[in-house]
Image (cartoon, rainbow, N blue to C red; front, side, top):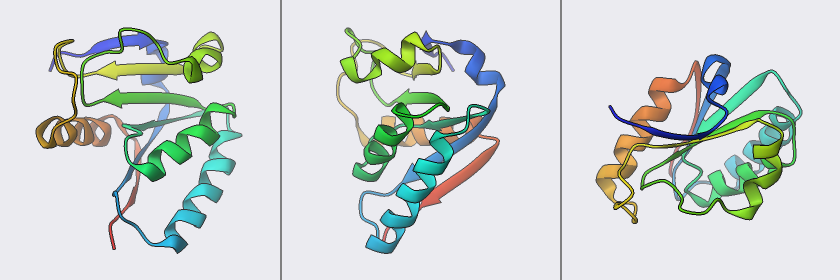
Length: 134
């Protein structure tokens, strides 16, 4: 499988926790997951890998970006043409890797590319944390 990388590829060799969350989940799962994100963000010895696409995944990413852990973002679309500003600090701190499994011409996430991304997250992960739908 071809992939395109931007950032610190060394993160691929660290202990990786895959994180996948459905679009619809219970409120109790949200609170416990955000608590988990706060705690894991303090650890400089792990990497969280996810697509960070669902609402909960995006909320978790905000906490991770403020912390010390490594982050691997797997895109279900082509690579960013311009890196979003929210990633600047983590990129400068060498704790961010962005992976795209698709060609630049793929600009929208589809069911097929999302499934492909999620399978890749599962493949990369040494441990997997999944939050399922209601």
